[in-house]
Amino acid sequence: MPLMPQLVSLDDNVLEPISKKGQEDVYAQLADLLASIDPEFEKDFEPRYSIEAFFERLGKKGDFWNGFEIYKDMSIPRKTFDDLEKVADAIEEVQKQLEQNIRNEKFFAKDNLKYLYETAKKTFVGNQSSTDLLNLTFYRYGNHLFDPNVDHWPYIIPDLVWDRVVAFPVVWKESDGVHGVPESEAQKSWECAEKFYDCLLAGYHNQKVRLLGATFTRLSLQRYFVFCVLSLKTLKNKVKKTGRKAGLIRTYQMQRLQSWVGAYRLAFKKNSDLLDIRLLHCALYGFVKENDNKKTIAPGVCVTCDPIRDIEARLSLCVGAHKTLTEQVDGWNLPLCPGRIICLKYEGMKFAHVKTIDVQSFVAEYYSFKNKWTGWQSNAKLFCRLFLEQVKRWLGASK
Image (cartoon, rainbow, N blue to C red; front, side):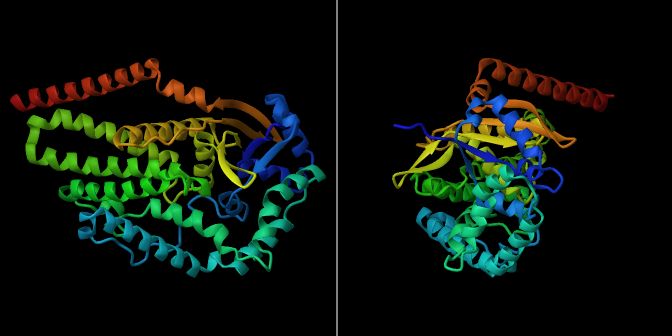
């Protein structure tokens, strides 16, 4: 039985340099570098491409959803959350409305996307090898998507709807998000949000959504982010009610939560860089692979030029969110299928190797006693600092 070719996903900041006019030799340099890092690149490998990567090649990067009124006039009444079946029905309606709203956005119309695709193709001047790679990725995806006999919606709607339903603000208006929830209402809002996410988790856990290629990583991160933000609000409300006596413990808890929220905001863009999430998802949970009309999950390699500190920070946040989800949700057991992340940098028309992250080793280190000890030390230092600040305030008030 022949071995499967290695599955590889290339970030747009890797694809872009090999496609520019005047940089025809860059692809050969990249190919040699990858082969020196991993001999498998000298053999057969299979580039994996997705709608997120396609949109980045069209120039839709960064805050992808900025300017789109995807959530316009959408909400779920609070009374709906008294019954999980009603929540599930409401989510189904939200998905239908999201799909319709996306279909109504002129940007996603087939004629507009085809125009952007044809415009992008004109800017690519590479050598034959880089053209071959683009034929396996960007061109193949675009040529199929804009075939006159193909309805393009089924190829873009599922990923876009999933990304937005995961980030849906549940009972909050989009203009306010979780930040608009009063502190006194935060606990009730989290109870609603938890039911909302439980329904999404159930839908994902039956494997149907997973094997369609939807990125679970967005769900684990968003759920934990909303939990942290609303827990912060709840704690602040309790501090106001209890006063100085209970201030130290709750201030400590608030700062720990605030640290995660701050890290999330620095590591991920507000309106989501879709491809960053896709790459992390593939690195942690594997690639969807089809053999003999059967879909399975297999590990692979992601190659990026994003800064190594950003990659490690994002990966740490994702592993932590997965850990929290596994602990908090009964019966949740989605297995990891870790691969590798090859981190490069591109300067002076040359790629250089920065680091290769073995994700399985990264996860093992995250759960290691050494890492836990480091966390305990950090928490102890935070608590001591807050305690000393509290003592100083007490002494100052007693004078």
